[in-house]
Length: 267
Ligand SMILES: Nc1nc2c(c(=O)[nH]1)N[C@H]1C(S)=C(S)[C@@H](COP(=O)(O)O)O[C@H]1N2
Ligand SMILES: [Mo]
Image (cartoon, rainbow, N blue to C red; front, side, top):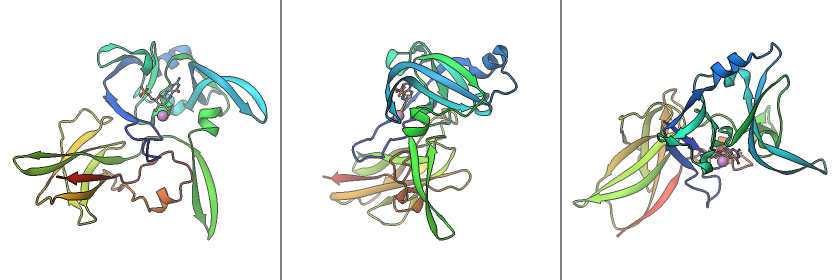
């Protein structure tokens, strides 16, 4: 079970729901690489998709297939699967049939669909989806000077979001999900009030799937409300607020794991 989130999910006001959980089935990647015999100088593994386009680079028009790479070390991680099944059925075409990479623990972009070639190379790999697109640009402060640092969208980050409010016998309850890192706890805030601890449903689907949380909302008054959640992972990292420098100093919309606030109207 693995929750795949697009690195751009929530980066724009209109881009939400770029996330989904499924049971992915296939064969582990590492034994195949071992069997193929990786040469001593191999450092990078490139995954190529069947989809292609024309890239304009340095004023040249270049044909390129979709491609993403990870280090050989990361590729050997036993969590990587060459996947050909989804939820027990053959992998559907939109999700990458016949075979895709499932790299649990990474953002969506690393999970190359419609795989038709895997290459081990002896240099770092670039290409559009490593170096030009899916690039996080963040201003970092160095000895009082601002530097714009560019990094490739990489490992999944901790995140949580309120999903819905339910009402049963006049009792309101806020329900949401948390994912991206092993979740230790989730807190919920209504209308800028105190943070209250939600209870997490531990009927675990494994460490790579989201967990659901819920919290009672006593005395919900009619009208508009704002609900925010923040997850904490097992290393005590807290989901940053939208005005936290880690989010506010980001110049691109990728890896947008700031706190998600939702508006709700109680009738
Ligand atoms: N070949 C190929 N693989 C790809 C992509 C693509 O455009 N081409 N998009 C990536 C991105 S950005 C995401 S978020 C995930 C989405 O996977 P899904 O369609 O199974 O949800 O696939 C990734 N793998
Ligand atoms: Mo994506």
